[in-house]
Length: 501
Image 1 (cartoon, rainbow, N blue to C red):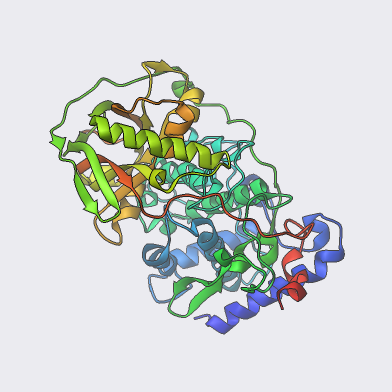
Image 2: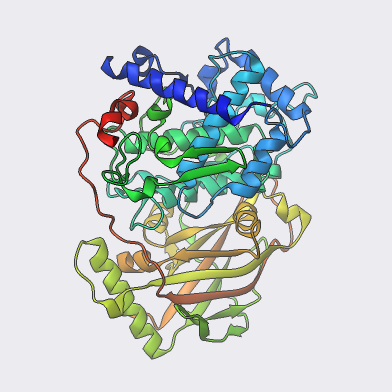
């Protein structure tokens, strides 16, 4: 087994190499950093064979305590990964780095890098992953081969500047809204917290990491600043502490700020500007609001000292049919919602807000369960919209009414530490809709199917409700002064080491 100290030496070696490259031209190849390639390019390199051999060996090794087994990395993901929470990107970036080191150790190829699958260029799984031959280490049973329905350009919109969960109009949660339904559509083990057992997981997260770097490049946008090494005197506290992977494996969070700081780069650092062609059977058409369905009403009540339910419905069930749900709010509650929404609109525009108007309006899906083994295998998800009109084109729906997605993967992520509760802050969305009358809210669940979706009931929910929350809310983060060229320069992190001392 590789020891923690060995991993540390690998990380330090990568960082030192990046530092030495700082004086070279701003090209990954010229800087000498290992470059992660897109799959179609990667499979033509000498590293393709070692990659297959390493994956085959890791699949054959069933010892969950051995870092040379995929089961070890799946268990790390099961027990430690944050989803729908701060450090989703940071944690997975370090996870991918350590997995990459293990691939090199197993294969004996120090040049082996994790490739990525650029599904914004082609949304169908690479053919090498769909060949069911018993000798193919890349194949596992899946529910779908195409993820076009999960893709969205919202994370890359010009106005998206803030980075992390907990800030307004932030990149990280928007990218998760692409990440999650890709897991759902592919399905099989990818719709569970043991998704690293599927080799496509690593190409998926390679692309998530690349897309993050492409969005931030070249100036880091609103990513909180850190010196190298982190110092509480001149670094944002966001980067304090460690990402934990196992009892003897962790990584200082600040080292995950920029992949170049870890000594790796990507062949393509351009953000997507368009979606790939849709499959002929799924050409984008105007969306129709689903018919309304009535469920028993849920009572208004205090959920906690800082949260109050404004009402909802009890025990909604979801199947192949899309459905809309109408929620009526009492007059005084509608007025409070209006104040909170107005305050969020002011917050997003940089204006001061009154303390009595702070808070958030949240859609809460409480105690969600998957209703069958077929549903747990994924191959579908529901796209959730609020106040959706009768008919709307798909892009407009995404921009003005889209809340998020719910599927097998999100429920698995929400339930692996307890009862599944999925929630969405819709305050900013309501503010951008320009509505002032909140006596009624509508929630529309549009079923989106992959190649082999499950039939029958898929998701059951104890309670679907609207909460008025006064706990910690998204903010406009304070930005520390950032040195010119602090981000995206090959080796910029280690080169800044003197600033952190």
